Picture 1 (cartoon, rainbow, N blue to C red):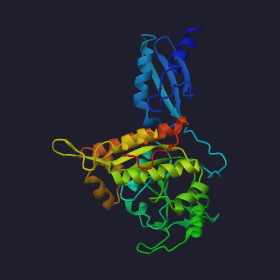
Picture 2: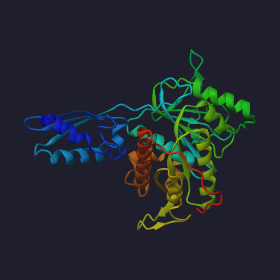
Picture 3: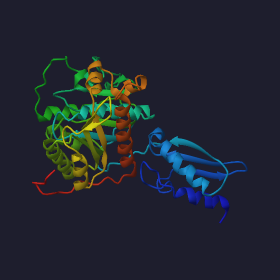
Picture 4: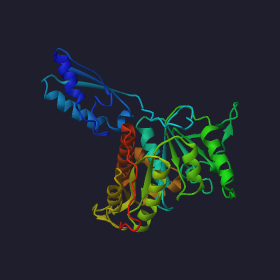
Length: 364
């Protein structure tokens, strides 16, 4: 076996920390070549490279040093993987649909959706948000946008583009204080319009911000949308954990893979001494994820920076670019980046586990 083949096999066995797959198995190792003065390695990642480049670079460079004393020179590209969803109509130009759901309201699901979208966009992904809460749309307010959507020549709705994220929401079609009084069939028709009657362009990820619960909107989306998977948001409180179990069971029943669980408002970190106070209890999300054998995507701490960012119409991930030194902002931004990276890592390997049934009276 030639030296070059041995090098290729050595590097193909390196585990990508983000996906937990080897570079060979995920098809990321394009070229590994030993030259007179260096080792050149070319990697094509199936996700936005900035999500996992730093950790992967360290792993590859360490493996190269076990093979030769020549310095490694790495180059990265990305080809975002589209997860196929058999039996569902594909949305033109959209590679992956990911539902962000919760069992109950007030757990910060929309906050997680918006900042996850911003984290992915900042990592180089093409991202959209579909605000599926038709009765109480919140995404426009979170971005401080009051525009109205318009139709193009093909009579398709054109998303509102803010900070590089394409957004569709009922809030862009109604007056601010207008109430929506629709029954199930009308909701179904509107959701179909938002999915297939919109000129989304080219997107790597379209995040569906679902309303809380397991009602008509959720059922319509599971029938209509080619969802590659779902992430669930909870808080450590017992009532939230019990409600999110219903969401887990719903996605199991309709065959949508659960990519993982996010625990929001996990703790409060003192801005002076960084001491953590677990206001709503500790590790409830981790225990639930372990019980249902789904990935735990991470903890997001409580912070007064979140409501102030939402009130200003400036997502926290955007504020982090200009106020990274502000106490608490960097910590929150890092948490959302970690959640986003783990979410996409689970999506890439296409091996999310379905929730499995547990006792109805399970202690959480």
